[in-house]
Length: 113
Image 1 (cartoon, rainbow, N blue to C red):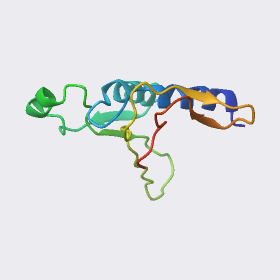
Image 2 (image 1 turned 180 degrees about the vertical axis):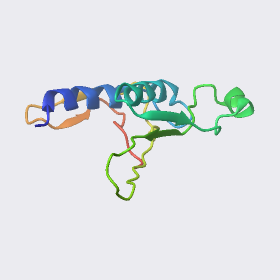
Image 3 (image 1 turned 90 degrees about the vertical axis):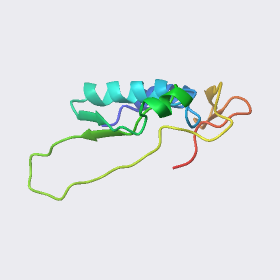
Image 4 (image 1 turned 30 degrees about the horizontal axis):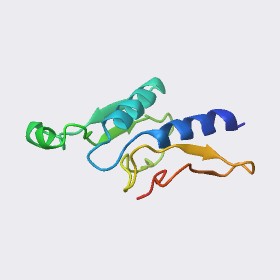
């Protein structure tokens, strides 16, 4: 059974992060923590080396999270973005009476994937 309130709360938290391209450090740290809390092996790559971080200090590297299975089967891969398109700073999600989640003002909630 899916806990809709828990999923909605997490979604609202995720879309509220300021995360335009090169500004995804906070959401990256949050997602990394959540994945580790779920018991996944979490790694990041070196896409944000020292030179890159000097120019873009709020960037975050690519995250790789591995959940090892316990049955013989082909692996499954999911891929997604942490960053959003503009305007993505100061996002305020809201839920309408019919349950539709939108942006409260003139920002996006997230788009790109």
